[in-house]
Amino acid sequence: MQIFRSLKNCNHKRISPHKSSMNPSKIKRLVGKYEVGRTIGEGTFAKVKFARNSETGEPVALKILDKEKVLKHKMAEQIKREVATMKLIKHPNVVRLYEVMGSKTKIFIVLEFVTGGELFDKIVNHGRMREDEARRYFQQLINAVDYCHSRGVFHRDLKPENLLLDTYGNLKVSDFGLSALSQQVRDDGLLHTTCGTPNYVAPEVLNDRGYDGATADLWSCGVILFVLLAGYLPFDDSNLINLYKKISAAEFTCPHWLSFGAMKLITRILDPNPMTRITIPEILEDEWFKRDYKPPVFEEKEDTNLDDVEAVFRDSEEHHVMEKKEEQPVAMNAFELISMSKGLNLGNLFDVEQMRLQNVKAGRKGNLNVATEVFQVAPSLHMVEVRKAKGDTLEFHKFYKNLSTCLEDVVWKTEEDMQEMK
Image (cartoon, rainbow, N blue to C red; front, side, top):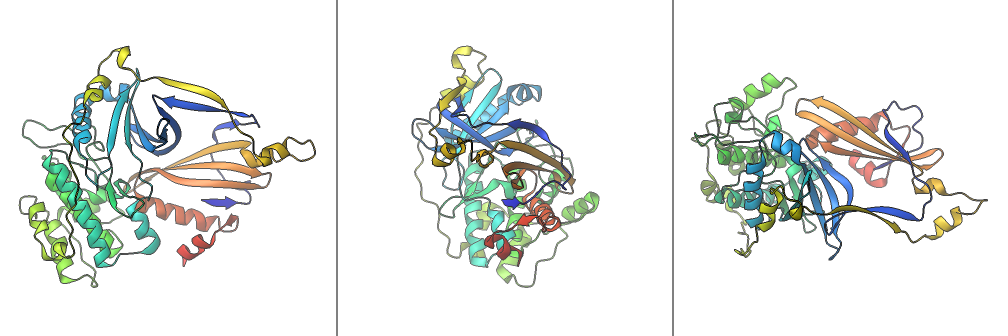
């Protein structure tokens, strides 16, 4: 987040402007027992919002799907099957799915809220990792992937946005079985839809002849391991056709600082032939991988209730969750009391005008959707929050760095920002 002294000279598109006055009340949106907050992520088929369980106070992520889109793309049965499977998956390195709810127009998936940010933010901020650190994250990633594959769940879109960290620094894979909602397995037992961020996609996904979800996921894990250790992508090109050629031929070079064991493992994972590509059981026996390996310890419960999954797809009002908005009084703080004085108006400190800016940039890694909120703190002082709504994390950080450089004369930087730029 940055503080802008002035935005008068910036070109921007103004979307949904609105005024908010010093009103001692606020609107609270409820979906069932969950109080819904701001948007924290957006995608083609879904929007993710921060929410809180009003009974326990526990924070959760609320994934909201449009029922009309789900039915239009004939995704209902697949979502039902995958959500049911995900409810049964309780692994320490996979984001938990707590429950599913439905209204007349929406499907609500309640997920574990992970607070440590994306793993790749560590790469962007601090550069490549030491081998022992990268190995620990890769071990956790393989643990999660192996567990889900054993239950017939394939991610099909492993990428930076889906690798999160909890407060203890442990890896959490998100969107397992929910990322590629429009995928379908045909009679040949293979998937046939090309998807994902191109740089992380396996060669067999690109050739449109069908692919196995397990081996395709493993390729993506190999790309992720390379980035953790090298600090850059193994396959990258400004021309999409050239990028596909590099991926199909597995045309990459390991940096000289990698150990022989790391190079050997990466090469065996990034094998363009899925039939000879290393498997997860073989990875678990690899000498480089096994160093300091600690298998996950957790208990599996077999008594998970799947009634909510069935209820979501029943077109019956008795199974619909209640959506409502409540106007609640808000306790006024000292600044708000002072601002009521005719002689001193601090109303601008409390978000008198708020704008949403949105820029969609078509990059070589897919569409980068950048959402921006501008808060007027004072007549000549604005606070601007820039966040990635959709797209590749590394692409977003390049965009953000360029934006900050262009606006360096009007941006106040924190000490942390200054350290990151060194």
